[in-house]
Image (cartoon, rainbow, N blue to C red; front, side, top):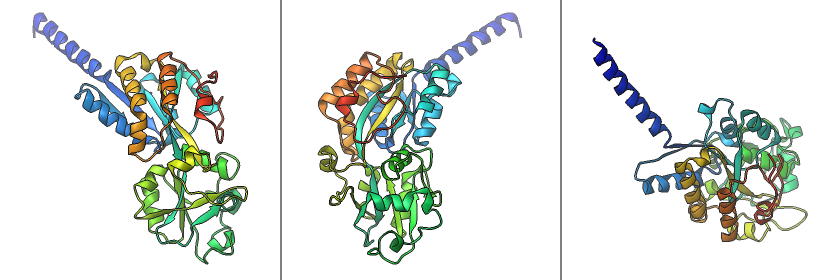
Length: 334
């Protein structure tokens, strides 16, 4: 092959590489929480239609912790652009991002009513936070195995538990809200990062009890029954948009988030996608049965994104009962 042909081939190969490289820049990578997944998936689908295929948005579901591992990865090529999170970034994850030079913008997008569920025809209709602690605390492992051990009025039936895996933000939030310490849980339960697996497990088990984001319950009301939760001697409250907004569904209502890589946010495709997401987050949240933030909160979040306001309002730890309007005003920490 003569020199001209070799040179021509080199030009073609270079052109192909550049084309592939340009195409890769138009892929927006999202991963993380299975709870946030339905909202981000709705945003991705509508945005891709709007862009008529010019931008591809991929949405993974490896759990909040698994998502942050990718988001803060040391190797830039492995990182995601956006991380779905059902709880705030932790101190360890903040340190991992800092070590990798990853700055991030924290954006609350909706409220979730973390829902305790049983099979549709289960006699259980109400449970206290204290009883949930009795069921899920580490000391219950291998010991609390029957509903009657929890409450004498409950049926004499084997207790089978279903819940998120340890990489899940839902797991962390639920254990902190009920047991009193994040990740403090018995280990003898059926665990999955895929909430649909948990739905199937509980719905087929008359002694089953599980928990996950409200959207997965709302999509399966023909198979599942939500259990009213009570705390401090107050009457049990069922999860709903009203009970989340009026604050009566405490401690199991929580804000959910997306975290955007600040460097990725400089790309026009990512910037446009995130702005589109925030402007339509209320609609997407309602579509998948979550509780939208107020219009003022979405506007504030959009302003924070536009200013590139990096860091977290939580400082590496979770908070129960936080107001979105308050955290959006806080000075973020990195």
